[in-house]
Image 1 (cartoon, rainbow, N blue to C red):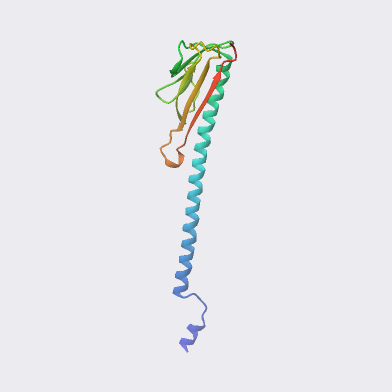
Image 2 (tube, rainbow, N blue to C red):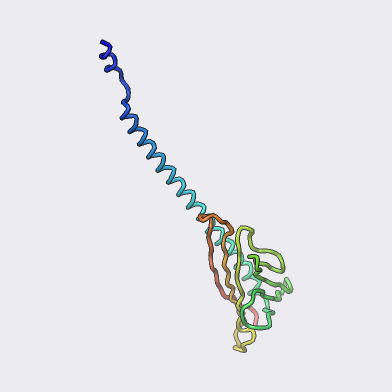
Length: 165
């Protein structure tokens, strides 16, 4: 009689319980892996957006003054400092520092979250080609983060000519 009572009780066997736990563990592990991948992708995307925004801002800001100004650098060629005379702002200088900053008149324009390197290539100042003097600005903007998923860099280059001859 005692054996009959045990057989009639509803419940899970040990094997059913182990299979259930294995399926649950597999599902949770997959979900956590997917969640981690999404977080890393989001961080990488934010890093790329950050360097793009900083690069665009630096180019846009410098372009306004370069186009409206007279280039004061005495020679054509490559330089880290660009000297200008702007009709409204007077003498203005842009420079790239060894510490990864982009400066306008000694004031930092670049964000603290990025490292900026670059150069100015001046052409048409001394060549006598009867064309507008022009400046090619080459900028490399990269994130400062040491985490792999938060690293990004962008290289930008454009040429500006002054609007006055």
